[in-house]
Length: 175
Image (tube, rainbow, N blue to C red; front, side):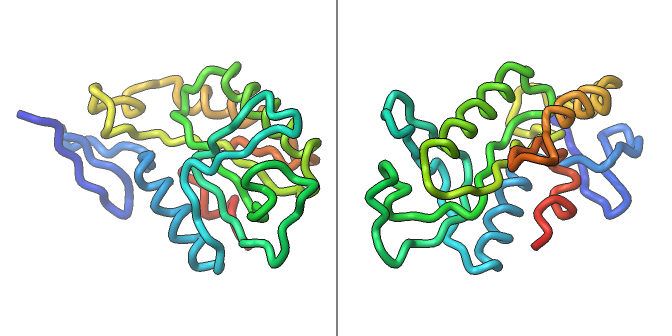
C-alpha cells in the first residue's frame, strides 16, 4: 500500500495515525511565493537568469519577484537591464549541504556588487518531499530541527541574505 497522508490544521498525520510536526513541501513553497508575489503586484518568474558583470557565470534563481523597468538600465547586464528584482528565492531541502548555501551567498554577493539594484535574497528550506523516492523524507529525522537551525544560522540580519524555514515563510515575507 502506498504512503498516504492528510494535511490537518493541527499538523501532518502519517499512515500510522501519528501526529507529525507541520511540514511544508517544495510545491507549497513555490505556490506560496507565486501567490504572494502576484498579490503584491509583481511579475513572478521561475528560473530567472542573471549574469555577473564579467559574465563569467550565470545564475538561474528559482523564483524572483520583479517589475519591468520603465527604461532600460544599460549599466546592468542581461535580464537586469529590463527587470528590477524586488526579491529572489532559492528553494532547497532542509538538509542542503552547507557548502551549497555558501555558494548561493557568494553568487548573491557577487550579483549585488556587480549591479545597481539591491534586493533581498532568500534560501527557503522545505521539510517534506513528496517528490522524492522516500515518502517519509524529513518526517522521521530526529535531527531535522538541529539541521534547520544550523542552516538558518548562515543568515545575517545586517545583510540581505537570509536562510529561512519554509514553515515560517509567512513571518519572513511580511510586507
